[in-house]
Image (spheres, rainbow, N blue to C red):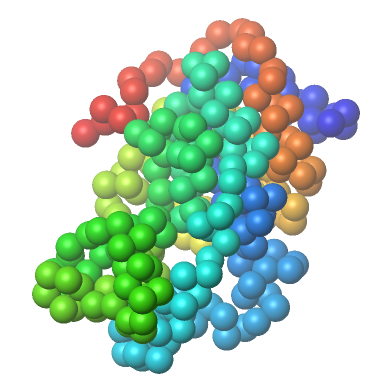
Length: 269
């Protein structure tokens, strides 16, 4: 990393005292988990692949649910390991400057890499948990997948026999209000918002970027392709995320804070 933009990004990270990170699918591609909207993304190559992400379709179509469970059973998430980008954010957290990781990913790799789970906000939910659409009961995904592996094509809720799905946010489903509230607080209380591996095409997560900029934060966007919010960023990088984040995490701190701290985000209420 030797470009003028990279130098500028390093300077911003060096002077930052409260960094919030917003990550997307591009952070996990080096772990073998394909993205959705990139040039080689699942939905780019197969226009029908996203149908299973519709809550209405999932509820109304038993065949689609059966296919969804088989897809989950063989998901690369279960064997994926954190990559250099995930590990770099752990190092940045250990330096005392990274306050919150807001992720659109559902793979749990930030936590697996060592990020404090209380500092990771999963705005699109998690694949590691199931939820009943009837009674709201939750449970480990591994229990449901064990039933699928043993022959149940569409495992139902063990409590009420309702429809079971992963605790991920589908199209047509509301985001968790508390997670979204804490995410907004995190971008309002940072001096640098580091955006990594996301096309910023999905709301309301994408709207966190202009919110941070209006609050006075410096925005760094690192993504393979241009995003709709490049114009509000102080620095835009089209370098590989797996190279950018380790480089930025190695920058020693300098300078002073420009914002008053609101405290540990895990205690916000």
